[in-house]
Structures are given as structure tokens and as C-alpha cells.
Image (cartoon, rainbow, N blue to C red; front, side, top):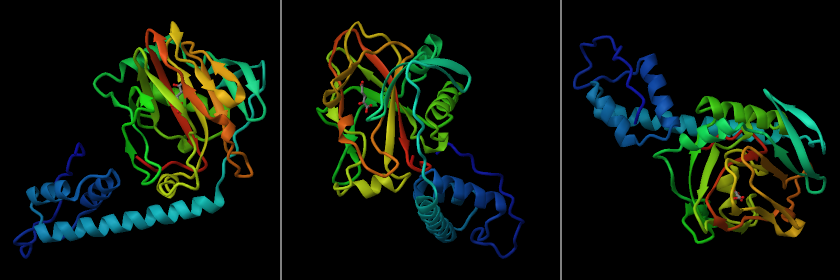
Length: 304
Ligand SMILES: O=C(O)CCC(=O)C(=O)O
């Protein structure tokens, strides 16, 4: 738990023994922040008791704040579910367009489904910075467990990765603004940026990025921002051989080029999912491959 406990601003209460039984405004903020961050009850109780709170009071206070947060999250989600839908814009073929603070080239498009290859989305220095910022954070990649909505390691995906929270650093902020400017999908609807590294022979077998409504685990995954609408895969290095992103049903293969990206949409405005965006990261035959993937949701993403 990194969040520091606030100073104990409790007035000295003569009747507070054996411990404090009232939450000051700053302790209420501290508790709410840490519950929302997913901190364990035991960790928060420990900090509170160390700061003079009554243990039983601490446990009850945490329970109350947790149930209130869950209710607020649920109600906001329900309201957004009915009121707010994003409709990504189409990218013009052959055009040079402004993406927030940078001009990019749309070098290839398909209209149905909506697919675009974008050159120069990131500078070489930005690619290098993103890769460098993953130092010490990479772990074996996992795939979604379609039954539970959880995740597990699988032969389907041979790579390692990590995530950058939305707006976590200056480069991530710029990339997110550019993606929002290009697609029309607000930054809030993006999942955390996923960084991925494939070594020699690394690959990601053909898969869909959306959550199949028929899967029992899908409601868990869509609760935090609705269905995924589209994916943007940004290539962070040149791969000497292999490592293309391949769309077998579209007979399309995109070669990684440092700073370029492929964008594809699989949920249209009518809410229909398009299975033709099945795609794979083909095996890296020489060198290695780095990408950053942004998944865009129908509604603001409130997961972790
Ligand atoms: O490695 C690639 O080219 C594709 C990555 C991918 O499919 C994904 O991140 O969902």
C-alpha cells in the first residue's frame, strides 16, 4: 500500500479509549481512496490501528466505505450504460491528419470492417521511452478465462507484458490524446496501455479481442466499461523477420514498423460484433518485437 495515511487530525477525545471511533474528513478521503484502489482490508485496518483507531471500529468503517463505493460504481455504470455510447470516426484513406500534437499518415484503410494502418503515430524516441519504462515490470502474458472473466497463462500467447495506467507518464498521456483525436473515442474509454514483448519465436495465436456475449465470464469483463469496440496495436520496433499482425479472414498482414500502428473496429454503431477482425501476432522469426496495445470500450473504463 503506497498511499500515506493522513496526519491524525482527530480531536483528542476523552471518551475515545480504547481507540478512536470517529473518522475525520481526511481519514474518510484516505479510506475511500484506498478502498477504490483495491487495498486489502487487513492492510487498511493495520494502518488505522497503528494510528490509534479502535480495531472493531476500523473494520466496520472499512466495510461501510467499501459497500458505499460498490453501490456508487454500480449506479454510475448503469447510468452510463443507458446514456452514453461512443461512435468512433472513420479515418480517411491516403490522408495526412492531425492527431492531437502530431501529423500522421493514414497509409492503408478498409471500410468494412473499419481498419487503418497509421504511420508515424509515435516518434522513435517515444517508442524507445515506452520500452525503457517497462524495466522491472514485465511478466508472462495471460489470456482471458472465458468461463470466469479472470486470466491465466496459455500456450496461445508467448510473450511478456505489463500495463501503464491511463495518463501514468508524459508519453502515455500524449499517446492517449493522439488515439482519442484519431478515433473520436474519449481517453476515458481506453483500457490501460498494454506493453508487450515477444522474443524469438514469440507469438499470439489467432483470437478475437471482444468479449463473446455467449461466454459466462463476459459480464464480469463488460461491467467495467461495456464491450470493447476497437483495438490499436502500436509497433515500437522494426522486426527483422516475422511478427506481422495477421488478419486471416481479411487476407491482410501488417508488418511492424517502428512508430506505426494498426487500428481495427469490431463493434459497429448498431451494436453488432464483427468476427472478421480475428487476428494473430505471427511468430517472430528474427530479432524481437515490441508493441503497445490500446483497447477501446463503449463507455468509460473503470477497471484496474
Ligand atoms: O502482436 C500483434 O501483432 C497482435 C497483438 C494482439 O493481437 C493483441 O494485443 O490483441
